[in-house]
Image 1 (tube, helix red, strand yellow):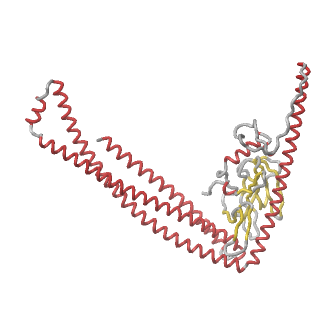
Image 2 (tube, rainbow, N blue to C red):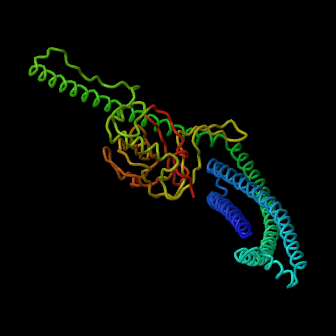
Image 3 (cartoon, one colour):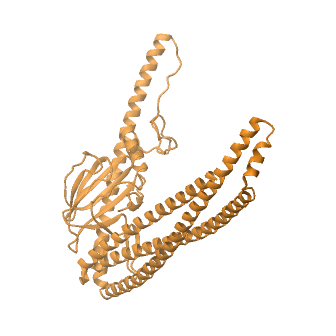
Length: 447
């Protein structure tokens, strides 16, 4: 009987703890999304009615729509979870009532049996009918254990009644929470419709200024073409230098191997030809370079243990790399971006982050600065991380120089103002194949 009580308490405790943890995680995520929405609203209020910033305004509204939809989805998950809790509570209440009925029936039978055998004569007759002294002792112990059983039955009934009352109260509370959550869901859906109307208003504004917007897009695209060329040139230069170093090293190794072979041949009288080591091709697997190299395709940029480890470290931290700014919002995402209800298209090789002018820009990983360039009135810094490259464009000033080794978090420079007078930087990530990678999939989620 005590085991039954322990099982009921343990199951109840585990279920409550699990429900509380899931609820806490959902609420935490909803709070984070709401903070993001509040930050976006703050940025939108700064822009106000400035028609020259329509593209930025649209990007912020679309981010807000995305965040709002994410918040509504989280609320929907919350509702489903509450419904699951209500369902589980109802099942548990039904089970506990059945258990309580069973306990009461068992206790009633015990009382009935005790009542029928309540006379002292029956008690003494039961003892004195024992065949031996040991048998009599056993019968006394049996009567004591039977009395303890009835006490345990009473305890189990009382405990089950308490748990049942508590579970009924929790069910009532769950239903109230569900009602409140449904109200919040309805509120957020209404706000989402308002956000969509706000987006339509900005899109109409963009259509009315299409010529100005097209000119703005062309200026941005011209900047992007220039930065792409600069990055491509830097990558080509680094690959060429790495290949040159690899060939020189292979030639030196072959020369040393031949000299050693000639020495061995002369001392042993062996006339067999020596072997030489040829340089690796670009598609050969890396071997003998420590852990993490199995199955990796050789890159000239990973010709040393240090550069190979930088690549592996960069890859292993995907989704966990720090942001280059302490504060900021992604106003133009990675890839092709079509402005709704128009034929206007932008294509971003990285992400554009809006922040305060003069904010500090930091390296997102350990590496070597391979270029510091002037592009129009801006500066750009390119850092090599093994076979990966990160570019930080639209800096007002640079605090590093080419050839300098930097650690993650090192200060690279300060944020400059863009055409519209806002602080803004472009973050671009590429690999040695000159493929552009979405930075947001490499950076840790914003909190």
